Image 1 (cartoon, rainbow, N blue to C red):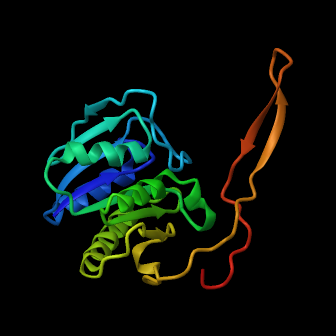
Image 2: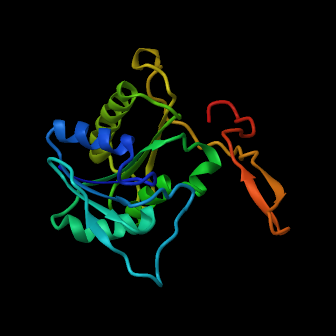
Amino acid sequence: MHLLLTNDDGITARGMQVLAQTAMGRGHQMTLVAPSTQQSATSHRLTLNDSLLAREFPMEGARAFAVNGSPVDCVRVGRYLAGDSVDFCLSGINDGLNLGTAIYYSGTAAAAREAAMLNLPAMAISIGLLADDEMLVNLSNIALDMMDKLLLRPLPRLTFANLNAPTLPPDQLKGLRVCPMSDSFFLDRYVQRVNPRGVSYFWIEAGEEMEPSRPDT
C-alpha cells in the first residue's frame, strides 16, 4: 500500500523514522511529509497567509519532504506530493502520549483528523517519553497490523484511530483495548517572571500531570 506518514515532532524525529523503516520492511510504499521544525501542541492550525516550502529530505527507500508549516499543512501538501493515490495516513510515532483532552492540542492528532476530513483513513500513534528502538519497532508493527484491520472495517468519515502505548518492553504490554476518550485535563500552571528590562512575562510550566481519569477510559 501507499502510506502517507507525518508527525508533529519534525522530519528528523526518531519515532517517525522507525515507523517508516518498519513499514517499508513490510513492503509498503512510503511518502513522508513532516514539519521542518518541532510543532507540538499546534493543534489544527492551517497556514493561510505565508507560503509553504517543501524541501526534499534524504531517506533511503522513500520520498521525504520537510515542510515549514504545521502537521495539518503537511497532510494537505502531502496529498499533492504523493502523486499516486494514498491508502492510509499515519501520524507519529509521537514522543509523548496523546490521551484525553491532549488530542485537542496535539499536532499528531490534528494531522490524523485532517486526513479523516479529506476522506483518507488515518491513525495517530503515540508512546510515552524516552521510548527505545525496541519499543518503537514493536508499536510500529502493532499500528500496521491495526491499520490492516481498519481498512477491512473502515471508520466513519471524520473519525480517526488514536493509538497510545506506555514506555514498557514489549513483553510487559497487556495488549490492545478499545476505550472511550478520557475527559481528564492537564494541570499545567503559568509562572510569572520579570525579564532584565523589568517587563513581566509568563511561562507555562508544562508537564505530564493530568487530572485522574475515569476507569476504563
